[in-house]
Image 1: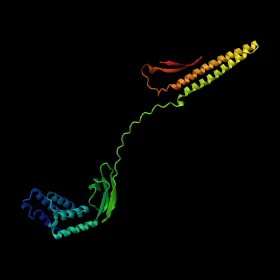
Image 2: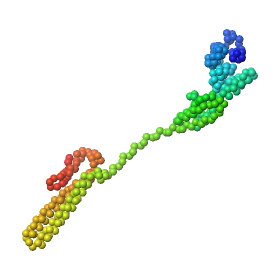
Image 3: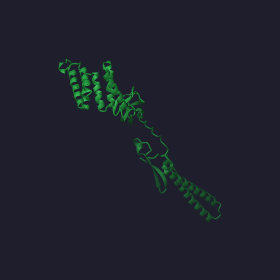
Image 4: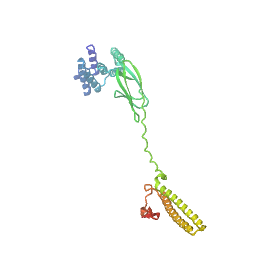
Length: 320
């Protein structure tokens, strides 16, 4: 550090226009403040307070930019092991100083750059989407496509990319000194919001299944059987009356007529009951269930078919 002090003092003088003392300068207030910050940085460097010196040199450069201060900034960053930033400072020193840099100082800066490159690694980042932000350790380093490789220090890093309407991608990895690596980040587009589903059309009315109308089927079936049995009794009675006409015995003939009359009466009763049951079943099957029937308006809303069962047969009544 002592070997560098004379050089740094020379740099300070050059930055301030080679004037011997700040009190004699005609520079602006900003130039005066820059001079004070530079001198403070020099004192802090002698004390090896690299962080404080770096802050002082950076303030001096911000107030009155001069290429010579970049050398000091690069030196402090290197001491703080901020190698990528130190490399950038030395490269800017050579670029901004150009032919004004003395040969020995140029050689010093070039040697510092060569030493730093041995400690650093290069990462080529390829992003599948142009215009995406590229971040290294949560700091934005550029926008894709990157024109140059990223210079990173050895160690653990996280490289990420993000773009509008795309899912972020990130890669976590470790770098060795002098390593060169290529990373590819794929940003998948976010799925477009699905349109709201169209309302499904109301299903058309379907005929009720037969088991939903079991009462109608039961009435109809029983009625059909009863009517058939009644017709059978009536037919048998008619045949018996025909046989009675041919019977020579009056007593036998009377008995046969009585039996035929009873059979005719029973057959008629069964046929009537069966017909009523059959009609009731047909009506029940024809009337939709309450939950499927459309709402009625006015007087029709109170109309209902009511089956009747009595001692003489079955029937239907309309209720209002």
